[in-house]
Length: 280
Ligand code: ADP
Ligand code: MG
Image (cartoon, rainbow, N blue to C red; front, side, top):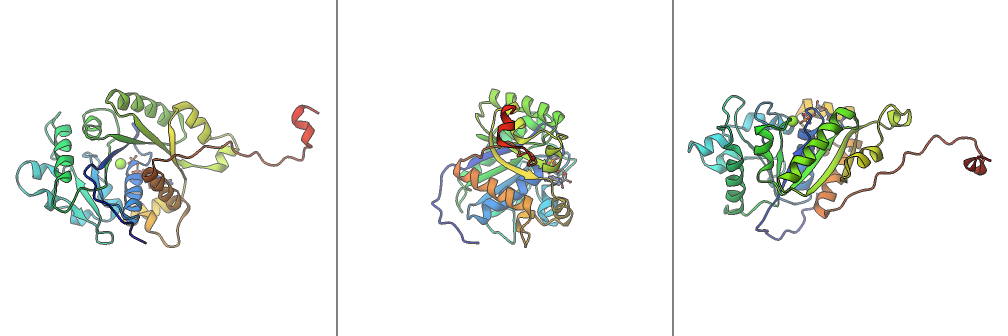
């Protein structure tokens, strides 16, 4: 794919990918939006801030290359560039894990470590990245606070079900309290067949409930699970898949600071005359 001409920027866009509820697609979004941005020519650093259930490395197929994490950098055991794992397919894409599953940063210290990380990336020799994407852990405890601390924008991932929406609403409140006003949402695992049968909330309903700008709508797609298990991100699939294309479009909108409109789902065409709408 064509590399977009880039002017070196001094401030990266630091975006946290969050949700509240686990298993709704944060890591999938981070991997696929991140790689889409890299393919558009932006330099991207993804940060796996999910210390307990680290799996961004697996989704990206980079798990064998993570030797050091931010904890080792903080402890002086290695340099930052040694902890950054550069993708072999897209050299402008890097991954950093905060810690190994059992070696946590001291409680309350994580946020400062991430602020340090962003500052270090800004001033590094090879240039400041265009995007830093932070894959947030589930829940709203210390790990969540760590992940949102350096962010100035958020992408909220939700599925169209009531438990995910309740958590999302809570998270929006917390993000706003933290001063993050630029919050866009991705509605994931959408099934048009279920929405039509009124067994699933529509994207329009979700948007009305959360009142956020819509960055993307990702369909439920078995290819997502297949790509997760293969460690080969969806957006690299050839031929493209529906969910992969939806993630690519979301990445574009993120670049353009754009959003999309949710539309009312068309009902099955009924054999009714025009005047029947008016009770005729
Ligand atoms: P989180 O990071 O929020 O915990 P993940 O990104 O790890 O969530 O996704 C959880 C599971 O859901 C994974 O097994 C993933 O393959 C699956 N999944 C995510 N999005 C979709 C989708 N659009 N269609 C089908 N499966 C999906
Ligand atoms: Mg995750």
